[in-house]
Image 1 (cartoon, rainbow, N blue to C red):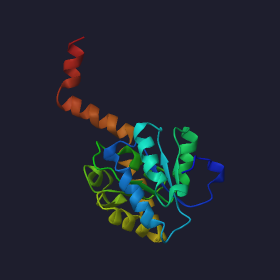
Image 2: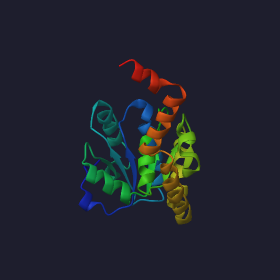
Image 3: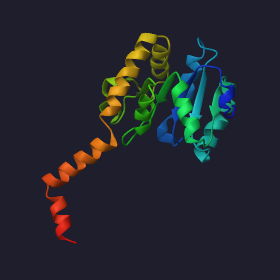
Length: 196
């Protein structure tokens, strides 16, 4: 287990950004990473998130794992550091068992980062063909999809381009316009004006 020093990261790495609540499924991500590094011994796994109770619990588990020196827990980092991590990662991995929407994957796509993610919840609907999906309860399947991306430069480029296009569907400006349109269709704006 290491702490983050962006200037010293020379290895290729997988990236996860978020908390470590049980439904985020990071235990299985670590298990999948153990499989991935058998043929990619130089690879790192960087986990970005505030070190809280759940991350501390994961850190204890990692202490007993083979790749403990290749798993980096960043704790809280600056926006500038996060941007650099997104820009230089090999794959963004999102193994969640339950998600409301899935903003981190879209954020990764914004930076041209290929996404491998869970096929649970709304993620396939949100990301469509811009991600590669795995069964989040199967570390072998998680590892297989990660390996598929890192071993295929053409696939990475396809995911990068699809990701850029997918992110455009979720701009704040578009969201605001569609929200106003719904309000107008349902006379909510007019009703709200009359109530003041």
